[in-house]
Image (cartoon, rainbow, N blue to C red; front, top):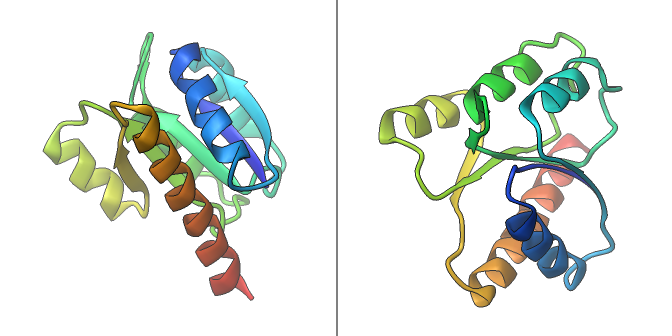
Amino acid sequence: MKVLIVDDNPHEARLLRQAMETVAMVEFTHIAEGSEAIALLSSMEPSRFDLILLDWKLLGIQGDQLAKVYLSRPDRDPRIPLVFTSSAIPPDIQFQLQQLGCTVLTKPMDLEGYDEMAIRLTAICAEARRLSV
């Protein structure tokens, strides 16, 4: 499974990476800067990743802006899940993201929570693959 993580907190990205590696064979790409994420999301090949994880609150840009860049691409692969992880997405933004087809998950507060999130993310990917067959 190939996963893109866009999160400006390297500690949280590392915890999620470690948790996911215990459940599946995963290849990660981590981006911490919004401008780099915009460049990648607007130009990458459509099926480069199996899962895209976005933090909502990034330095200089909100994750929902990144989602709109990616979701507006006519060549994007609709089977690739776009998942937001955050501890503070306002309810109205969360609703808008869900209306766009994104999944919103609350960032865990402990290591056990990261393990649970990894299992859930792996299931989201498996379901997306199953639906596309």
